Image 1 (spheres, rainbow, N blue to C red):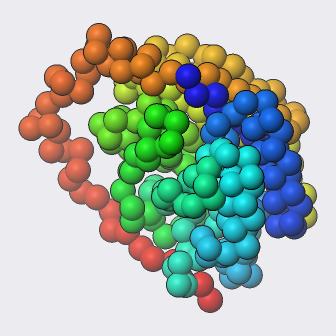
Image 2: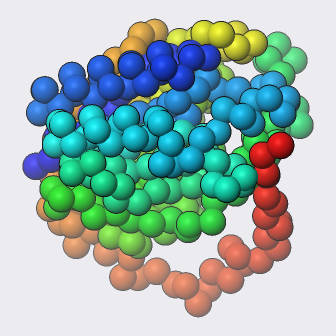
Length: 296
């Protein structure tokens, strides 16, 4: 068994305030026995994609910049694995990234958000204006890796919009993941039920645990007035909800993850054994070209 924590919190324009909050929650979670702690999408910043301004691109920083350096020290001091999402600047190319930090403070690996949305309209005339992530992020170029942790748990990561694509979740399942972590910044009320429904679907289809961690409350210091609905959730390989956070406040939720349960369920359902890759050609036809966002 490996105890895993999801730490949902509201964002702030100040990176220092966000870092202080992430560090405090990491220390609390590990004091309560968590060996892996995951934070929401873009944990170093507010969710800024509703404003289209080059100035926000300056919020990006290198993986070996001050934010991850500080969280590496926290991981080393607590002996935990931290999944820490940030706005990454890789030599001028900008990504929406999650870094996996080992209990020795070294970086195990990273995942870059693969599917980058650009909404042209909202579902309702009363909805706030849609965001434009393609102004800020280059589509990820690292595929869908599965990371080994020192605790015997294999972990995959998808970021927010990625969760709408079953192909991505399946790729992580095929990589042998026992746990899919999904850092998110989602606010629309109508999508709240879809949020949990999709995560439960991924758990069932791939026979792994899913931990979805969402922002909560309102960001401080930006133009955004949206209320992120939190509701961070753990789901088991049979699609059952283990625990669910509230929708108003910063909160940490925990689950004991057993890799053997995932492997046993796969042994019963045998979804991966009886796939038909020879029949799935249409799934990879007609792909839109990727693009690159560079800092200005």
